Amino acid sequence: MADEMGLFEVMYNCRAMRRIRPDAVPEDLLLKLVDAANQAPSGSNVQNGRWILVRSREQKERLAELNRKVFEAYVAGNRADALPHQSAEARQRMLGAVRWQAEHFAEIPVLIIACLELGAGPRRDSFSAGAGAGGSIWPGVQNLLLAARALGLAATPTTFAIADRAAAKDVLGLPDTIEPFCLIPVGYPKGNFGPVTRKPVSEIMRWDRWS
Ligand SMILES: Cc1cc2nc3c(=O)[nH]c(=O)nc-3n(C[C@H](O)[C@H](O)[C@H](O)COP(=O)(O)O)c2cc1C
Image 1 (tube, protein in one colour):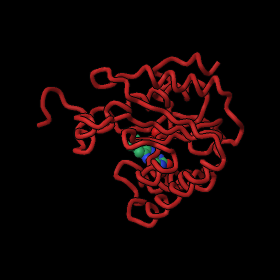
Image 2: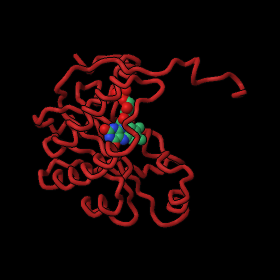
Image 3: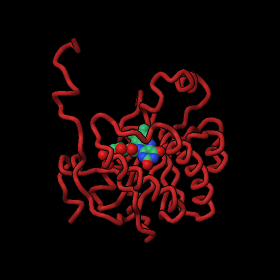
Image 4: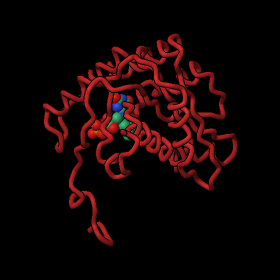
């Protein structure tokens, strides 16, 4: 059973899965994902994460349009260059998957949008200033990604479709007090799961001080 995977196995095999079958995902599994996300920590335990699960075709078309615009700007820019730790071939494979997702966005069974209820006071100011922005929602996003992987569901954290915040908020009917942070397309994978490839720990950590 996929959901019998151990935590470390899930973490090391939780690749971005962008190619997704159109088959519907049972509602109880979707609720399980949000419940897992909801177990994550938030600053002062304010529990201000909010989640929208978009299944309506009309809504998905709107988000697909927002995603497409930013995707096109992304591929038109220099950001498609290979990175030092990633071969040009691996980069092209990733871009191929990003393109596939952009072209099939509205066919993906559910688009999950992770939001934060920021209210109007100091929390909103800290969000605007960038300090701590998103710190109370990304742990929930990661919980959701891990839960999806454990349940055999494909998922990827994305931001293209919400880059134009005002437009995304309009589509999602979000009030001024709630901000979107991440959109996670979810469904059954078309391809196979596999291990993530990351830099070695020796490259990204130091004991006690950086230098
Ligand atoms: C903050 C953030 C924003 C991202 N935005 C997008 C996005 O808009 N579109 C997309 O296809 N992937 C997006 N990703 C997914 C990353 O490209 C992916 O996690 C990374 O390439 C590692 O992939 P891997 O786990 O398969 O190795 C985003 C990831 C993060 C953490």
